[in-house]
Image 1: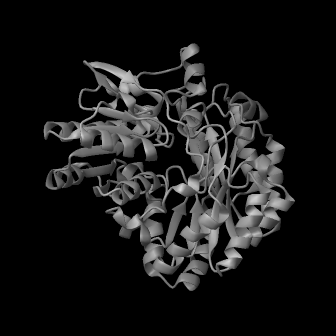
Image 2 (image 1 turned 120 degrees about the vertical axis):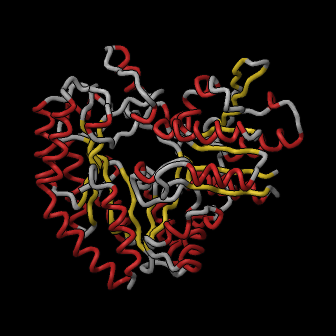
Image 3 (image 1 turned 90 degrees about the vertical axis):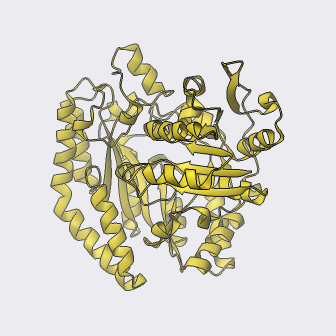
Length: 463
């Protein structure tokens, strides 16, 4: 069958330098199964006109989009145009997983795919191609006699090594991402933690049990990308990259066996309570140069309110350990949780003045549908109805975010501006020095220009 997979993120909605791994993996699986696949990414577009025109030119049998809540309006626009042209339409990703019945109330959407989509979507495509009853396909929703129906959930994929390495060249915008000379990779799925701003959404998407690709399987992908594209910088998008000391040790061994040790370097995410001296030494040994940590707040009250399960002191200790071993630090900060006050905002500003991370993202608490935070805000009457597009946790104060903290949002955004303004010159100097090192290392003006453009785009929440 002829299938168009679309990632409907627009340029103003980009919050990082990274290509959509999900649809690249789906596309690879479907391509390997013999289907005619086109992957369309709107991330460098300012509207959806090009995407809709490309779909008309392709004239596929199926158009499928992958959407978080804030991207649903874009996805719905694409699927509406597809439906007018007679194509079968499918929506997958976080929002359809959490709100399948709501999604299916849109008559332009024929099917939804819930949770991990690799096996589910491939089976759905076979069912459509064979014109068989989809009621036997676990992990999907559809309409039966006009009534939305959601089938039983599919079991999570236990053997992640069974999935192919994504063919990034299927993505129409992949050459644009290559300009940054860095690529994103995923090694781990699942999260057992209970942060209210994420859960239980992540449980539904990837489960509570942590599942990992083997270190050898991950290194096979890294070696392919290094040899084919000369990429030396990789970002592991997984939130819990440091969850297993044994896995990290095996990963280091696999890098050495492939001759990659010291030739490539990594940025990784972690929780502050998963960082200790032993882990930091392993991260240093595999050539980690950037550690991204969810500090979230300088107030223990705020950390407890979102069930983060960490302490302010653990955050300070993790930063100090990494800095001791020469690893740069990026801090994720979350402002505006329920109970946030002038005093807790000041505590966060004090924390950042204390730990002095190299860079920081400052997001604003947003109650995504299906999360415990959403239910908590709904219970106390702090939800404001509005477009799904407002569910973007980096929007500025003009975007109509919901005041869930009890503070006027102007106070929250004023705190964000103060933090960024107070750090601006130090961050600019640090980033300039890092850029010079990169320029010597990579000898690529294109990389510098690409990253400069992206950072300008993200300047309202990044410093």
